Image (cartoon, protein in one colour):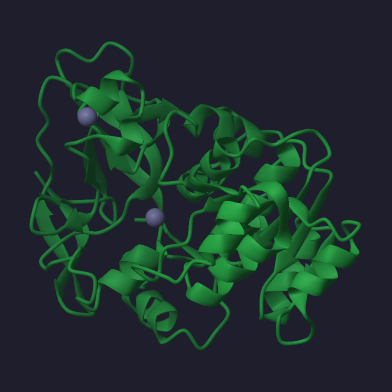
Length: 345
Ligand SMILES: [Zn+2]
Ligand SMILES: [Zn+2]
């Protein structure tokens, strides 16, 4: 049996090809893909710069669909079930998986990634095979397109969950891209009373406002640290989340929090940045790295279903497999202010 798949055949070059439909083992299921989001890591990776999308590869790790086939040992899923699945394929058996820290799995693979250690075809295809342990059922009120957003939502919810948030805390979110806009909503859902968004792009700050940010600042218009101090009785915010990963934005996140405050670090565009060490030490700041998610998918789907986290305003467009290469090129060009593009194979 063959199926259509969007294959990255060379740097920045795609072909829609007929490839064999995936075969499954006893603990795997086949999912007919209904929606799969294009991730920033796909867009950055397709030109070969990250070494994580070595061609040929079928990318795509933010997907949802319907189970069409279940392996002989699978008990929980049947053909017809509406599902999504974790982008991380964890082993379930290593030291970290046994502690429940599945995002830190020693044998972690990511769907739609090919690097030196592994290659695993993803969901820009009619069908994808995944282990049953990473599959999560969809609540009735969540569409396939919304479910394709659960992976970025889970990254934001996990980052918020890492922080010691207290009811009515003030938080600053540095970077109002996809993850930052979801972090704003996750922090609100977690009980923050006042959330400040920081970005240089006015249209992103408009979106941040629409999605619940109480105040927005652009470092091109004002002194962000001074403005935050003004609004917090000169103490600083209780929390900050950095969702970019550059030295200046990390430094902003460190400088806007109060003594004893906490900083969530999600952005990681730069492999290393200069840290104001004495500020961190003498003000007793806590830094929380946050990677992917662990077990937050069901909660995220409920938050989407209940409207506590809105994803629809973050979708810029829909594409077929055939149209997808054009969208990849537009996203890679970076000239338009596009957020998420969802492919419907
Ligand atoms: Zn992603
Ligand atoms: Zn593991």
